[in-house]
Amino acid sequence: MTAGKTPFELMMEQAQEMAKAFNPALETFSPKGYESLWPTMPKEMMEMAFGRGISKEGLDAKTRLLLTLAGLTMQGAQAETPFRMTVRHAREAGATKDEIAETIAQMSMFAGLPAMTRAMDLARDVMDDKEDDEK
Image 1: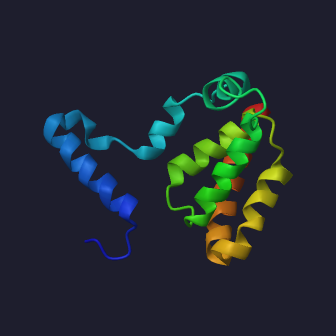
Image 2: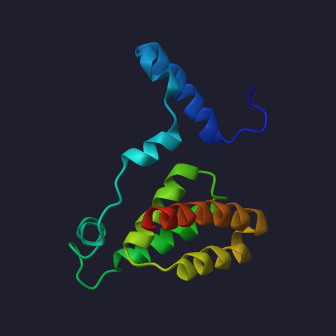
C-alpha cells in the first residue's frame, strides 16, 4: 500500500524488507531509533569538518546548519530524521530557538505554509526534547 507515502517512506520500507531478508533481527529497526544512536557533533568538530578547516573565512557551523534547515524546509521537511538531527546540531553550534524558528518561517515565503508548518512542528519537537534533557 503506497498511497500517500513520501518517496523517503517508500525507500525506508524497501530497506527494511531487505534488512529483514539479510538479518531477521532487524525486523524492528526504526529510523527514529537511529537518531538516538547519533551523538550531537560538537561545534568545533563541525567547523573543522565542514568549513573553517578548509577556509578560515568560511561560514561558521551555526550558519551552515541554519542554511541546511532552510533547504530541508524548502523540500517540505520530508526527511524527518535528517531534519531533526540538523536542528539538534544547530542548537549545539549555538543557534537559538528564535534563530531556528526565524529561519524556518522565512522559508514560508518560498516553500509555502504547509512546508513551514511541518518543519516548525519537527523543530519544536526536537527543542522540547532538548529542554527535557536539560531539566
